[in-house]
Structures are given as C-alpha cells and as structure tokens.
Length: 526
Ligand code: G4P
Image (tube, rainbow, N blue to C red):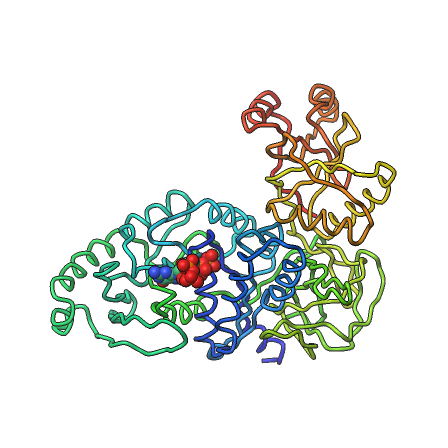
C-alpha cells in the first residue's frame, strides 16, 4: 500500500450533530480523553462558560479565537486518526454549522434520552441527508430519568426517517441505571459513575444468561432478557451498506458525563465510520487516493487574531497530499499560489502543518481572495460540488446612520456574504438591504465588522420576512409572469439570483400552491 493509501484509510473525519444541551461538548471532551488528547478535556468546557458570559464583541472575538483552535480537533485512536469538526451550536450557531457538515465523511448524532429528537437535530439531519452522510447515534444521559429506549428509537425512525439498529441496550435508567448490554458480543458493561478525567473500566459480564447477571442486577436481569428478545425480534440487523448510504443508524446508549458507553461508541466509530470516499466535482468524481492534491474551502473565519486582522480559510483535503511549500492552483481565480504556512488546529494552539492527507483540514491565510466553495488543485480545473447556501431563517434590515456611506455598505455586505458570514438580499421594490442568517449572533458580528472594517455605521432592525426561497423555473415566460405578480416579495441575492422573501409560512405555502411549476428551493449550491 502506498503511503497515501495507508494515511487515508486511517482517517475518520466527522462532526457531532445535536440540539443544544444534549451533551455535545461533554461527549467531545470524553472522546478526546479516550483518544488520549487529555490536555484538551476542560478547554472545551471553558469555551462554553465564556460563551454564556457575555455578548460583548471583544469577548466574542476572544471566544472566536478560542473556538477556532478547537474547531477542528485531531487525535489518534488506536490505528485511526480522527478529525472532529466542531459544529457551533448555541448563540454561535450559523451557516458554518451547516457547511461544516459538507466537509465530513460521517456524523455522530447525540440525543438526550429525556428530550428525544429536537428541532436543531432535525435541521442538521436534513443537511446530512443532502449528501447521504452515514450517522452513528448516541443516546445520552441514561443516568437520568428519561424516555423508554424503544420509544426513543421509534421517534428517531419516525421523525428523522432513518432506520435504527441498537448495538447496545441500556439496563434501567436514572437511579436504576445499571449499565449497557452489547448486542454484538453478548457482554454486559456495568455502570459505575465516573465524573471527570478518569477512565476506569467497570465489571464486564459475559453472556446474558450468566448467573452473575442475576446476582448483580436482581430482577433487572430477567427484565433485560425479556426486553432483548423483543428488541432482537423487532429491530433491523446491522447493514453496513444501509449505514454507509445514510439509511440506517447504529445506536448506542450511555452517559457522556460519566464516561459511560463512550468507549463502545468510539470503538464502533473507528470500526464502522468510513474513511474519505470519492467526491464529485462538476467535471468528474475524484478518488481520495489520486496522487494529485485537491481540496475545497467550506468555511472562512475572520478576525481570529485581532492584531493581524487575518482571515483563515478552512480547507478539506480531498485527494493527494498537502506538503508545506507546495504550489497549488486556486481554480476560480486561475492563480497559482505557493502555500508555506497552512495551519493545523491541533490541541489549543495553531501550528504550521508539514503535511496533510485526505480527510484532514488545513487552514490557509486569506486576505479576501478566497471564497467559500473554492477548489484548490495541483493544476486540474476542477470544481467541487455540494457546498450549499441555506435559506436563512432570520432577517434584518440594514439602516445606515450616514446615507452617504451606501457604497461602502454595499462593498462590506458583499464581502461578508462572500465569506458566508451573512447573506444579503436587495428587494426589487425598493433600495433596502436585507441581511439573512441562521443564527442571531451573525447580525451582531456583521454590524460590528461593517463598522470596524468598512467604516460603516449601521443598525440592523426587524423586518417582516420569515423565510426565503430561491426561485427556479424552466419556462421563461412563466417566470416572467411570476416575477410580475410577486414583485413585492422578490429580491436578488449577492449573486443576483432571484429569491422569494415570504412574510409568513402561510404566504409561502400559498405561493407554492399557486405556482406549481415554479421551484421554491431552500438550498442553493454555490
Ligand atoms: P451541548 O454541548 O450539547 O450544549 O451540551 P453539554 O455537553 O454542554 O451538556 C449540557 C448539560 O448536560 C451540561 O450540564 C452537562 O453537564 C450535562 N450532561 C452531559 N452529559 C450528561 C450525562 O450523561 N448525564 C447527565 N446527567 N448530564 C449530562 P449543565 O448543567 O448545563 O452544565 P455544567 O454546569 O454541568 O457544565
């Protein structure tokens, strides 16, 4: 096997999808702990504390600085090299969260056993579905009272439309939580609460009929046997093809905060989750084992270092090898650039990277020339597909304090939308400028950056837009009619694409009913 083959087969690049408070941060820490990157357990938490502390910009920026260093975490686990991409979740939820999911090979879904499938998880799952991303599921907080395991699986299947295959099963819950039974090995792992940074292995009992089960578990042993008969009869066998196609999810139960069930999860993850796979470009599919380097940019982070005002473009390596000092072609601009100072995001420092392999994420310094979705190659003119714009869910009107600064405002807004920080819309009916985002913090960031970087004093205020849809129609005459009739709801985005801005969902539904041959798209490929 070539070194490239060897390296790429080790890679497992993934992200965690969950609703806030389900336990993503806790689980991330534990994964790092089990992966041996112990020095990191703790920093992730610190970030969350900071996040809640203030919305003041300088703090926010500091926080971003921290969040970027931990926004990609690489750690070895056994033979594997795991890249965990952070998906900002609380107030810092943004389109970056969505786009990050286009750069992973699989995802881990965390569900709170008491709350079941929540709204944010549904949205993130929709994004995963765009690329049929394989998903492992962890049902968390079994040390607390929650819903029945069978009920949770039913809900996942019904709401998220994905088949569940439990690979472990909880024994009791809350005060009666005794451990998990591994359906594959027939072994029972007994629970012992372990907060903090220690990893201690609890007792393992081999075989469900082992008398030791009755000794330790009492009545719960027989309950488990009965339940297992039921579950094994009713649930689907693990089907790797269905998992890899995003149609079936293996499910694990545990308690992240107690380090419980995490080892099983991580072992299964490196065993089942796919290494980098071929990706499509507009021209052809590119295999990760091709010798020529290729990669694409899925996120741009600005102002990470206030002293340098730099922006960093996050690139996912898709094929070949990145080597420090190599020349690569920025396909959109046609320019060749020499990259000697790409950075990695290991541990809590930014380090220069010597080499990187498919599945790895590297950071390129960017002074405004790189855009989200850009492809880099060793020469071939390729354009990676699948970096979508998502219909914003929040909208604000930008109002200038000094009307003479309109040009500067437009320039700033354009730049911000190229970076993917916010999207901008110009209504056909007037000269307003409307910003769209999926996270409310994005507006604060936009207003601050407009002032700081473009000298534009603007305020953002409420506007009566509920959602946006990109408009497409194959019949140009009909499109023209549609435009005339819906003039007051239409706008152009930063790329001059036609967008319908709906004041209510009811309005949107009516418009869709009235115009069945017009496509109202919630995502648009870059
Ligand atoms: P998030 O990143 O998905 O938002 O969730 P996070 O890990 O921050 O966890 C949310 C809350 O749930 C935290 O409590 C965390 O300690 C708790 N938690 C995580 N895993 C478990 C678990 O297995 N069992 C139980 N009982 N709780 C769990 P918090 O009070 O919000 O924060 P903190 O004060 O503990 O930091």
